[in-house]
Image (tube, rainbow, N blue to C red):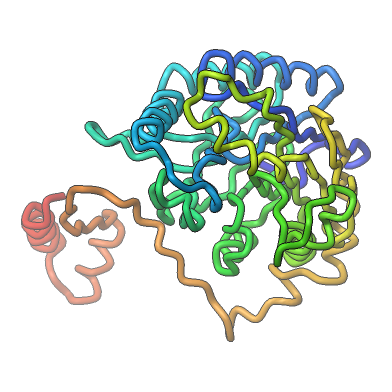
Length: 371
């Protein structure tokens, strides 16, 4: 698939969802996602991006400052979070894929994702990637939950640090402070992102600065991070930040009161940054449910003519990245070997040995290795 897919004279319209999810209710969250994607698609958006763990709700109740938790309430909240998490694969995922297929729109959505290992109840902070044909492309689990997030989420691995080919170009993404992990960003950059999704739970205060939406860009680390990645990768960064009020949290949620102080940070601020590091759409603080923008291939070409981290501004003879893409598994796997017939023939010729004998030796070794 062409990296710069589509008609170069027709910019790709994208949409970022700032609307709140339906907290800890899978069915209603799927329905709301469908409504928002439909609205975005009706305005010709070909890529729709949701914020961190939008499906179905970021656990603001575990952030610093909450003390004297009632253990029963905490246990109930954890249980509700698990029950409303998505599993890969599942019928819930198929419903999200149907949303993409019906609306002919690519989707990247932040999810609480529950482990697919039988018997496990670990939840991961994940991004789910879906193509416009309704095809599940893959997931990315956050590598390192931040600070108190480790109370509720497990750690991901390098097996899903990927970039996915879509009808609008290659898409990758990272969750929250992963966007400060230099080597994680480098891994996606080196795989040729056209769109980078940066998902966040809100805008936070740094060094005790009082929250003021009109000035938050000065103090929150989100904004320099997304602009730097856009320039370094020569890609578009879609930064997704939700807008959530206490009214969006159901009264029956046991830790609603504990959530409210932290919801002040969930006041939007989604933006789109172009490959030159400047805003295509400046941070949209407020309650806009959808933030739209247009991304043109021409700006990628111009920016990479000046700085191309995959080409003339790279020194792969000096610096290389080592990426472990093995998936964590509870079972050890025997190392196997795999040789093609042409490779066996070449070995036989180089060592002047009968090919049939080489093939027999190979078969015995393969059996011993568990192939």
